[in-house]
Image 1: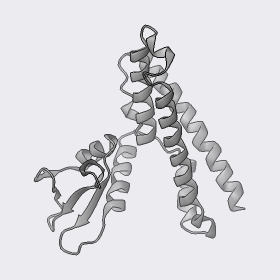
Image 2 (image 1 turned 120 degrees about the vertical axis):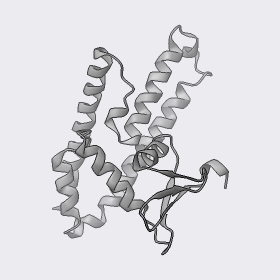
Image 3 (image 1 turned 135 degrees about the horizontal axis):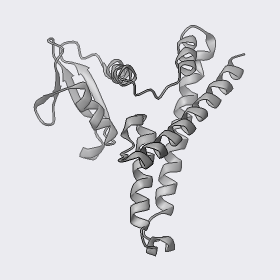
Length: 183
């Protein structure tokens, strides 16, 4: 396995401090969120017991972003997620979500391929700037962090808000479909 595809190993000490084994320094939850946004896989383990704590910390990162007003998940989606933990339909939800995000990731890769230098449109003036904006948008969508739009100025902020509204609508549609599947 290539070095950059191996998960970044973070060890949690008894003091609850998180230690990056690659750089030999302590990191914060925000640092870990940054690694993930950059596309890095992360594994967090308890130093003493060896227990994998990755899920716990990823959920904590999401909760912290949500509590700061970076609301990506509508309340009805969160409510339905809680419901899935208490009913038999919950067994289908992880596979459905994984399939959905895999499909988004595949779509992003295909779009980026079609926008490659081999594309005749690449010769258009301003194409590289448009491609960079598209890459930033897609990275923000797949990272799940709405505040990472890279916007500057009111026009881009409004564009980001429009995109966020579209994403919220898609999630609401998915929630509706999940609710129908559970009945």
